[in-house]
Image (cartoon, rainbow, N blue to C red; front, side, top):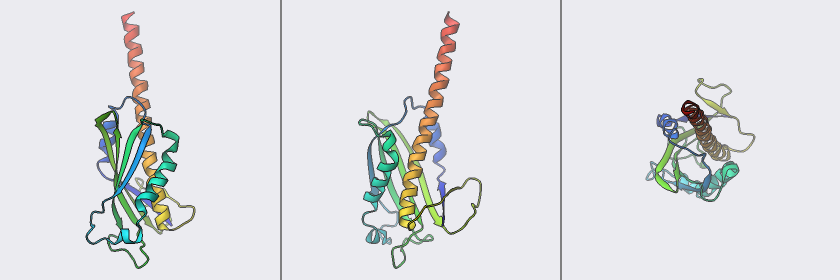
Length: 185
């Protein structure tokens, strides 16, 4: 079983918004909500009523290294659980797509919000369809465990990317300030 990740076009905006960020992101609170886009036709929560709790647990594990009181608030809104595009799941509640939006907000400045969409789809194959696809191989378990864990890992990876961008900007700013100080001498 191989898992693929795609991200929405809004992802590019995240990198641009990150440039404003001055300090690395630490995580203070994680909230997970399920607001399925096709709530009236989806039976996903009938099969997976603990989805929000399970996702929050996995996110806490993945984000633990950067967890700190007073850190940024991370909100995950799960908007899709589907099986090959259908919001009505199989007889056993099987699904192969999970999608949602992750918002990372500075609790001290509610205008400092960065959001990105994540969609994870599980398919059975051994090759990636294109270079822009990240292949995740679950060690064991079913689609539910693998997709929830994969979504949490990709969320943590994206926040880590935000921090790397922040570090690069801080280094660049420090270099510019150093040059300015030398010019004034």
